[in-house]
Structures are given as structure tokens and as C-alpha cells.
Length: 128
Image (cartoon, rainbow, N blue to C red; front, side):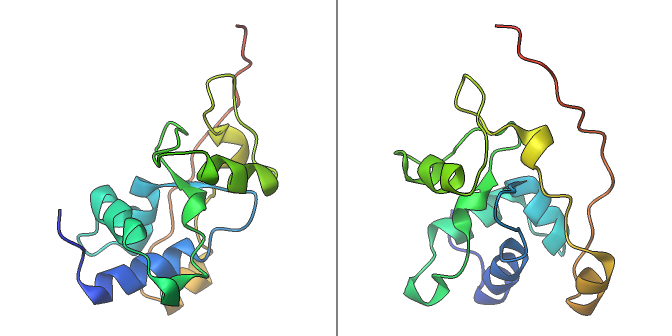
């Protein structure tokens, strides 16, 4: 898939910069915040194309919707663990505990983006 247009990539990076340390978002949630035809794949491609000028974009805070790390190697998991993000026994982020609720309404309005709908992310106990 080709890289998204520069204007879309800039909006994706702006949204990802809002995810605080210790929290994560899914590719789809970032796309929903950006809106305007952005999809999860565009978010992934844009983050994969980060250059030296975007070193402040916390790419490691964007994971698959089920909490799996979608990059190769251990770097993303190491960076998240250093921020206090917990993982289950399968190596997935504990999404109910760490999932970003999205930007606040004032920021979203000021940046022509969207908030995320409320969700009930009750944490399940692991039995095995």
C-alpha cells in the first residue's frame, strides 16, 4: 500500500501524539479520531514511514485492536513496558487497562478531529 498523502500522515501523527505514556490505541481508533476517510491500514503505513523529522511521534503506543504488537522484534514491547504498560501471558497489551479513551472534545474540535465513543472495557481475569 502506498504511503498516505502528506496531509493525512500529518493528521495521523498529530492524533498519535495525543496518546499519553502508559496508554495505547488501536490503529482503528486512531483512524476514527482522524476521520475523513482514514482507515487502520493508512495509520499503519503512515507510522511505518516515520522519518527523522517525526521522532516525537510515539508510534509504539499504537497496537492491534486485540492488543497484539504488530511490529517485528521486541522494541515496541520494550518501549511500552518502560512506560508501565502491562501484557498478558500471550504478550498482548492488557487493553482494558491501558486503552486510550481518545482526545478530549475541545482538542478534537480545535483540530477538526473526532472523539471516540464511550466503551465498556471491563477487564477480564485470566484463568490460565
